[in-house]
Length: 316
Image (cartoon, rainbow, N blue to C red; front, side, top):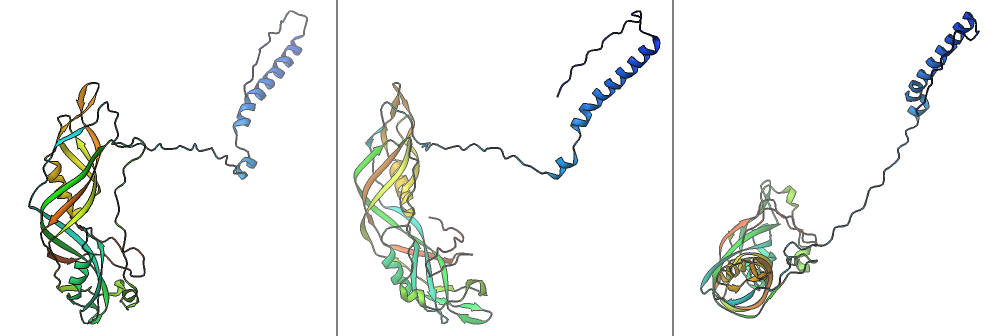
């Protein structure tokens, strides 16, 4: 609060006595002292203000984020595929993740594929685990039945491929891409009811003694989808898998490396861009064989239907 003060001059020769002038000057001094002290009292924190902790919440603005696809771009002419050659006899590698139930004798009673690098592997993996043998889990020195999560490296070749329905479409500006996630399978009722030791109590988990997976050669039809980056000179130099089994990423990358395209154009000039590539591929596989089997450190499996712990991720 501001105050305005005016100092009034008192004439000596106006017939007012000296004593009266002194009294008026004294009164004026007291008024000035009170006026100066008033702001100090206003700024002082009073006791009732210290007792009342009143907080006035400030409104927080609510923002919305528009769905923007960073792969989308405005183009006058999209790219078109002119020439491509599917690779032949290409070696492929993938890692399957499997949960296996091992009893106190080291006999495997069944397996649940958790993640598969190639299509249609479930039957071959479950068949291979029927003949698998393990060193059983231990609690102290006592063998106990338990679940174990394993990574199994599979290698083989894709002899050749026939592609149909190949499409290049521009990404939607308002719909960011979402990679497909494999659904999580769970064991049959028989496996769910078998007794198993709590993983936290195990001195050592089951360790593989004899596990061998063999997948016979066959021909499979697979739907594939990926984001593909096309350069301004009509080549493909990057991809983002959207619907590609992990074991087929190397094959798809080798195929895209053979592409020759008419590049996209904007304002009459060739420009780089991303496109969504989709196709159906008939792939002829040679036999696949397991080359390594190892337990996943820290990974556990709950057969009741809850998701297993991640553990150390397996590569492809």
